[in-house]
Every structure is written in C-alpha cells, then in structure tokens.
Length: 275
Image: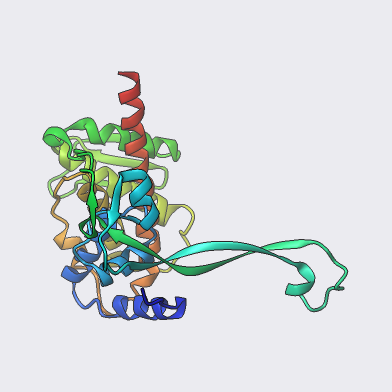
C-alpha cells in the first residue's frame, strides 16, 4: 500500500472544502458527518473524498479483533490523520534553555493511518443496530432536553405565532408547544446549537445572521439524520455562500453535533441497562 504524507492529505482536504460550490454539496458533507460522528470533521471529509460510499470504517486489526472480519486481499485503505504524542526535553524545544534542563514537554503531531470500509471486508455478519426513532416521538426529545439542561440551559414551551418554531435567549430556549414531536426535537437541537455556538464560548465571533442560522441548522441536520429522522433544512442550508470560509464552521458543527449524538446514545444505553 502506497503511503501518503500528512501534507498531501491536508492539501487534499483544503481543496475539497474549497470546491464546495452549492448548498447541496454542503448537505452531502453533513450527511457524511452524520455517518461518522465519532471522527473529526477533517477525517470525515478525507473519507468522503476517498470513498464516498463508505458506511462503516475500522482499522485493519480492529476489523479482525472486534468484528471477526478481515480485509479482502488487494483492498486500498482510506487514509486519515491520527494524533500521536511524544516527549522532548525543554532544551530541545527552546534554544535559550540550558541543555542540562531535564524537564520534558509533550508535543502532538498528526500522521496518516488507514481504515477500511465494511464493503472492503468479509467474515462474520455485523450486528444490526436500529438507530431510528420509533414514531419520531419524545424518545429523542427527552435526552436532547436533558443534554441542554446539563449545559445550564433552561427549556420552556410556549404557543408561538405561525412561522416561529422557537428561539434562544442566552441560557434559555423556547420551543413552540404547537409543534409535533419530531419538530420539537429538531427545534431543540437547532436552538441548543445557537446557545453553545453563539451565546457561550465563541460569542465574540463576527458572524452574519445567515451564518449563525446555517451553523445551527447544520447541527440539527447532522443529529436528526444520524437517528434516521428526516427534517426539512433546505432553507437554512441554502444560506451557505461560496464567499464564506466554510472551514471556520466545520469544526464547530462537528464538535457540537457529535457531543449531542454521544449524549443521546449514552442515555439510551443507561435506560437499557436499567430495564
């Protein structure tokens, strides 16, 4: 297998993001985020570039040990970037320090590693996991509400005028009581994303209203899509403009959506253990 260099992967990543010309292409990227929420945004995109049909990936040894499957002969791996850490003496990092200084500092770097899609493997059948939400009811809303509360955000219901689904006020989310269960879950994710992305840690970002809405709805799209719930996000995702540096948003979208998905999955796991 021909090895690739980290610089080559980063260049490929930048070029792919720069080529996103439309909201439809942006949507395709978010769908990939949804499938691979446990990977960083840049690795999700790298996998999308190399194998857009990928559905489940793992390392060569992981397929063998965890799934009792093996990679087919001749299959080409999907290159992604993995972090590695190493320790160096402070004197090696800072030339102003005396070489006798034995204190160490930890450095992190990224290097290519390879994963393979399930279609590139054979062996034992994979366990079937149903991630869809039955009747798209409150089974999804409740853990999402719990997640918001865990972040110090109050969730309230009000009857709102037509065309207004909900809003966030910095520490408080209002959800339209007239919305159906699926809509309530989607609204809650959207407004929670606003709270976490735009009211808290990164509130100093100079973003237009269009970008604020696009980021929040992108999170809603990724989360709901992961659980098999289709929502109409076109009007928000269409706010994506080619003139905007998409790279600025991708990490925020990926981090928040991944945290929400993980929280819901963990909540479901705890309930199953209790029952």
